[in-house]
Image 1 (cartoon, rainbow, N blue to C red):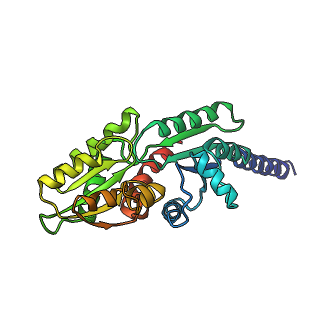
Image 2 (image 1 turned 30 degrees about the vertical axis):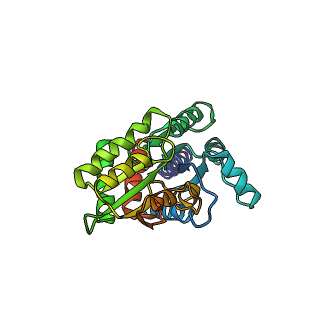
Length: 285
């Protein structure tokens, strides 16, 4: 009788240990953070990223955040609610997530990326129950990233004749991280002398690239975004009908222009780089 009682007590103890272990087990979540877009056609790039993330980590919940308040307000008027990074983190904390891997979908580690890093780190200290957060790096932030992206573009857009060239439209920034754009041009130059990157708000400029195209006697230019989505900058600044759009400026200089309206997040090969960075963030949890 004593033996049966001891066995029963032992079984109850094991049962309680299992319950405690389940209660104390970490609840992981993924937060994807981007500038955002209000263009429905451009958002398919984000759908592709989510699909890829879900295929690699089917058991981890995915949340989204847009850093642009302007875009969030615009979408809100359309009945689409997207959280800010702090708002999404607060929701995840309230939902009981103890470990969060945030992944930046920015291109370079500029001011927006560093703002997000501070926000994510700050929530670890103030959000009750949130034990640890990690931050995945943006698309190009180290040597291997730049090599992979340069190789992708030169293979995705091969040059058939000497009178052709490819021009990538980057955003550019006044932050010191703008050096990644001319740095990326150096990596492109290792593979091709007909692939260029220029920026809307930084350096290199389109004017500089046009001078190079003329020196090389280029006649046909393929124009495509060096941005996660083909949003407002791509639709208007790059391919718009206004005379100051890149397409119009190139045509005014005598070039034949072909536009490829496709954001980086629509290419699985590029998304894989972000996924590798997210894996590093998840491993860090």
